[in-house]
Image (cartoon, rainbow, N blue to C red):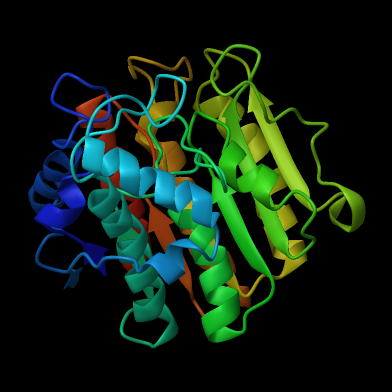
Length: 309
């Protein structure tokens, strides 16, 4: 199942911003061009409730976003994530749609699901960051546990930027299996995700960060990817969340990795194998970043192609 709708497309910060609202449409146009549009089911956007947002975020932060949404000016963070009128509702729609995708998979309405405008992995429990208002992936982990009683959940991230909002929120949680291939934080926002960051306390060794140098290409990806595959395979999760950021492809205007869409195709296909082996097939993909529109369209389409194969 692939999610589509104006409520989802509205998440963006204007046509002149890297995270513009057109990313939704270029992806769906590519799905049709790739002759996948007629072979998949579509889901509609849903809105998260306040209680659902509070599964991950603090009440003071949710209230702050609501206040800034009414004021409609300024920034929600230090200068990356603008506030605008209605941002509270629009950001809640992203979270709600990711949760709807989880419901579809858990209830058997879909074997796998993909939400293109989602995977907002920089938002922390009490702050916005890096174009991310609410962290739908973080909410999803708690949702799977509280509504469905799952325990061991794998989060796999191939966005060029480290998924710091997820990592630090679950750094001491041994049952959140975290694997992230990203551009080295010494060269790219948010400056985190060193290989030495493997978790804390009882979770030490349950997190896998693989930073790559600027200019790393498919050869680099294919060399390190088996570490992710073997780690997730050995951990035997009950559900997989994949963050499919396309800003790791060559030509992205704000990053420096040089993958092709083949990296996304391999990652998605391998994670589907692991989902079939350990999770009764259950995997949800989220689009994440990506600011070259052709890269977004092709990489996400390859992920969906792997999901339906």
